[in-house]
Image 1 (cartoon, rainbow, N blue to C red):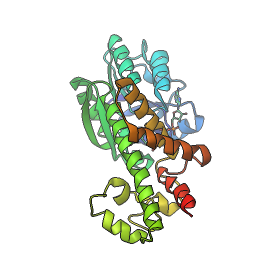
Image 2: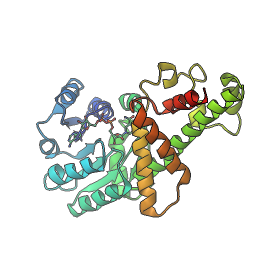
Image 3: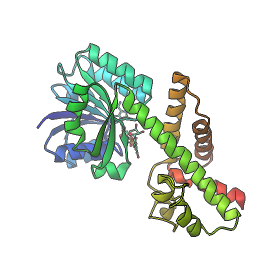
Length: 295
Ligand code: NAD
């Protein structure tokens, strides 16, 4: 078993670090929040006073931080010059593709091996070790990371070179954001046209309009499987996080000179929702203003 530094013990990282400890690794945990550190101690991790003391001597360093600037700063201040030669850096945060590529190059220059390994699946999947990891990095990085990621998830997929994990993540979530937006519009239009929501669900979920957003995550209460819609849109995947991911998709598209008119429009829809609603509500709550506007 290995010594793993885990930095960022929030909603996602807390459960993931606990699962690494459960798998038998020595997990040295650090977060700026004292409460998060206490929870990590209860879950079998060793709380550290700062990131550098978690990193020193660790075989692998996992980060699960809010955004690219946090990852870049943590690597610069607490990993480079501190981590053991050849240590493996696994960044599971959702960050922009350009930063992911940049930190991997910087890590390599330090004699370290880095992969980007963002996740699909929310807080419940992090706790239950059923996340999907999309990994960007070389073959050695992917092979070595797999030994740790498989303790935290159900699927570990090599997306390609450094940055490819983040690229897969933004493309996947752009599909999710846009299909949810149009699914909400379709249910609102169906209502306007006098269609029963359950009847429309029964038809669309076995027809060509089918998607994960309708079949597994229906935005209408009482229709389809139990989803955040049945809990007044509490829990689930926050609209603010969907907005973050769509902004990352827009940044990636701008950097690659790719045209994403539907993805960009979806970003505007979530932006408007988050500006005038609670961004912590599940992203499928964007159906609410549509239904209200339709009367
Ligand atoms: P969170 O805000 O709950 O946790 C982030 C943690 O990082 C916090 O505990 C914070 O104190 C800590 N932190 C911030 N800066 C730090 C630093 N410099 N050093 C140490 N700790 C620091 O966020 P989360 O929901 O756990 O998400 C983490 C990442 O996972 C994000 O990039 C997010 O986009 C991604 N993600 C989240 C979900 C989800 O459903 N929540 C799903 C997929 C991916």
